[in-house]
Image 1 (cartoon, rainbow, N blue to C red):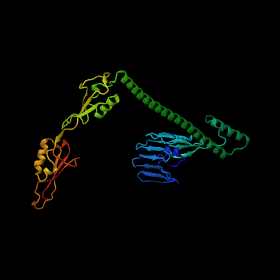
Image 2: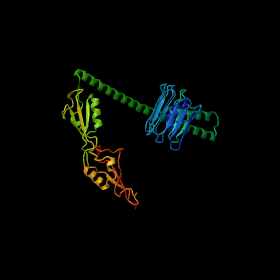
Image 3: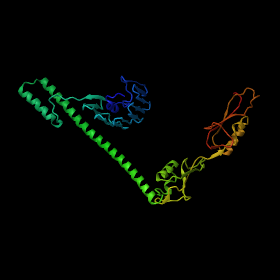
Image 4: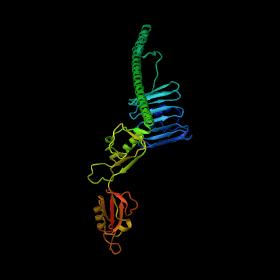
Length: 388
């Protein structure tokens, strides 16, 4: 990635400047939005057609772009940049450069020399800012002083109508520029306030988590290796198994066992992974605030699909009558049994009509007698049949 204008590229280009050609590397961008950059120094950037991508600099810098349009960049020198999914973002360069982009696409970038470039949300273009020599620095008094300038010149000499029109035009342009500057300052202040709120919220979250961990450690030592329960049994019933085990681990427990019930069948009103019971030391009822040994056995039972033992190996089903095999499987309890005639026979002398050639079970590579299979796995019985 080129070193020049890195902040401007990050804020105001679709690929955050991760894909950009220069004399020190090669790059290409395709019609679907994907592309790549390979720097001669070993740096590289890639963008995928969903909008996500990354950049790895040879100096240790790195950046990531996500499919929702958000992104961040962190330079090895301390440069820091973020872009949010609404299009807004900021850039703080270690060299003193900085920039802001607002959600409407407008914004500005100031390089390390203090030169500022503004971006217009309407034209999506770059605007160079310049001032006439007679325009004062104080924007609020600009109009009054410009009018005084025009009046004084009229007293000293004849100002032609054409010249007066030109001056009025300049006055209007300067006034618009002054208003745009004030608006930009206001938006910058609002953006900085938003970013500060986000930083404070993140800091509070970290402090809250740290305080919680400290309380657990103190309680653990004070109560001689007992942990204060943060949940009651009713908080877990009906929740997902991953959620429950994670909460128990966060609470400090280490001896957690899980047991699938394998009880869900056609018409069941429970869902896969739904917790049925949580047992602590064999008891299914417990309350928030109880003290429990950190290594107490905790058993969590949860619902999964019913499984049935498959009665045949693949070899045992070959050349059997397909109707017999299908009927037996359905009687066992398998619900997704299908038959598929192959229409591969001319005379039926070698291979018999209606005999099994192969059985395919969804997700199973090798069918073995006695293996347990979920009741709703798709089973397809292929059999020989005469051509139509």
